[in-house]
Length: 502
Image 1 (cartoon, rainbow, N blue to C red):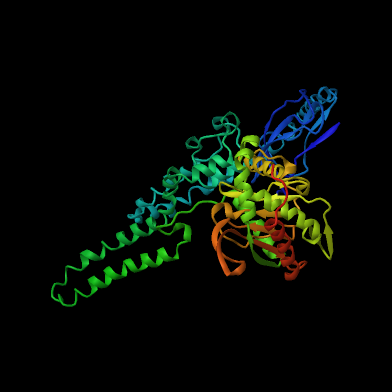
Image 2: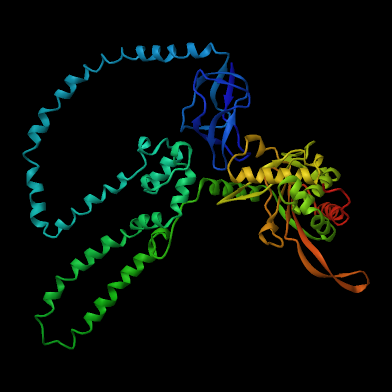
């Protein structure tokens, strides 16, 4: 019997939601054949079977969220499924005996009945004066119907398809009408991404606007109701006409003052001219990871300018043939990745992590590539990057980025990184100060490659392709001089590139 566990989709992931079983108990499954689908704050993907056999037992049902390493199923040789059914039946039959005890409490319930009957006559007097003296109170009943709105929750799983706990929770917290959300999951299932997409639309904003308005509403009617009574008393004394004008403006100016003060004291989410949207699960996890990194490592960034002219010419010369041969374009990123992998072999301390008072050096060079997603980012890993040439690295970059954006990455493709690279230059940024991806000790940022006038030998001015490399390192382990040496190594490889591209 082989246990199937909930996989860990990245170092910062602690749980996952099992959204759909692709096999049923008793079905035959082959090794690496998709077995079930999971959803985390970073990835929605299919999980392959760890072995060939028969799915004998399912321990976690669809829609359940469980911690990583939790056993979700078992794969056997076919005999297990037959033994599994009887177990639950035995438990169900064993349950009936308990019902007999209930008859005992019946007499206890009959005893307390007499006392309340005698107590009813006295209470009526206090309740009578309230309705009589409550002339203005009839206004209070309207608020009662306000209770129904909360009913618009997400409890109709049958109506909208299987819903994960996260989707139900979001629908309850933000009063979302799921009939307005279009499901893109299997069989039209509504996923957390569908809910987040709906919450970003104008339909949700207009639907969620009313909750912010109620706070000022109850204050307004009472102040308005209180003003009319004094009005009729003012007319009787016509003689002091000169004295009457002053009170009028005072009353008018005092009315808006408390309203303005009340508005300024409202929570930010309830103040006018604001729009509040919840953070997605992915955004929350990224925030936690970034704060944890800043609280763990001592971040220092060094920036070096690199002349990419030689590589730019090689790339321009080979890009057409490269595209026709591989089906995708050749960028500057694989060159930087190859140079970084070589530098990591020369400076192994950058390919390490801190464990208490020890330094753990990794044997493999697994470079994580930051990929921007809609509303977040993820860092898939290129394993053994030092063993790949430029074409191989470009193929890995394109493949991982494409599957990351379509949420088809496998568990082992988002963990095990030993060093990271972020290419913010693809969005036009010249340089930035990236944050270390824990538990690594450094990250390299690549700025945009642009043509600039540069002073060359002989004080001549030439047009060169320039880029900035920003290395952020953990000063607990790496000093500035060593960081600069590492950058100079990468720079030297790029400026004197000699390896083949194709």
